[in-house]
Length: 298
Image (tube, rainbow, N blue to C red):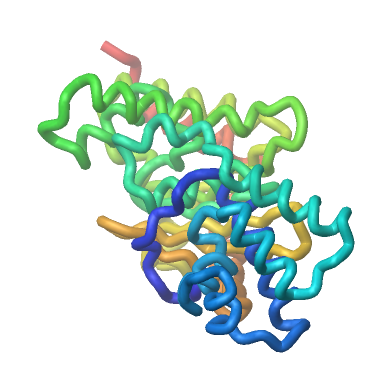
């Protein structure tokens, strides 16, 4: 995931993080032997750019290619070879989200792979409630805003995709920590109408009670703040070899940043909006007041 580049090349399938992890291991082995990407590419009947894509985890791995590269890199220990080959096979297994590939672009599939593997997800939103915290009705209203004219069946599939994403927060083991910061404008924008927004705010009140969910709201009186340029997410993974990744979604693509200086800039912006926002223990009171202001459903 080269910093500042758009994810135009959709991975061929499989857990994103496993591909990145295997690619990182192959890059370290290649560099330790002083072998160029071009020479490694020639060994597997491909180009240096193919090696680059493999090392960045952007393509699936052929077991034969991994075998040939391990031989070229001098990996002779049978146990080490087998562990990397097992990783290659696992990295090619399709993720659960592959069944929805007909209703989402490849660059978003990449994000779902990262989200599913993360231990900490920090997200900042200025327009919509974060996808992991949306009710089905709110999600439907948001999806219809961006996909006018699609069939009801497709809308249903997109809503179902969002619902299945949310299951990661309730995993019995290794559920990620979600730290969401939401601008007050998000909660005052009547997406789907009053009844939908009331149910959404009630859902947020319950979600904020989960031990792995921290929710903060930036009030209007905070004025301008550090990340006003747009929403983003920062993901952290359990594997120490993997850097934090910043995800910035655009209209027709997404940018993934993992260079230290870029991640640090976004991390500082996230820290500043967390300071600008009300503390998490104020969130239930703020949401309760919003419910009162919205009024009772008809």
